[in-house]
Image 1 (cartoon, rainbow, N blue to C red):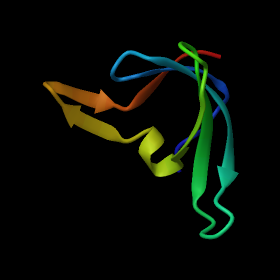
Image 2 (image 1 turned 30 degrees about the vertical axis):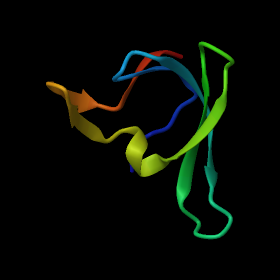
Image 3 (image 1 turned 45 degrees about the horizontal axis):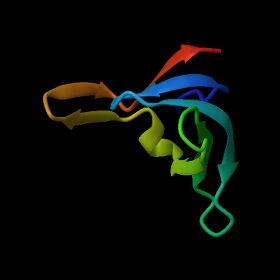
Image 4 (image 1 turned 90 degrees about the vertical axis):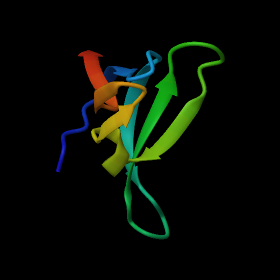
Length: 71
């Protein structure tokens, strides 16, 4: 299982986010990542943890969905 540590991350499309914590889905028990956009209105989002560190391939890019850039 990948490590999920709070801190600043960059999405492969360029946006920056702060990983707040992980949580469990109340119905399925699936691990989720709770994070906040560091731009715009600063929306808070949740995404399945399995997607957080996955490799994406899009528009010539192949690499991690999020990369940690600072604690």
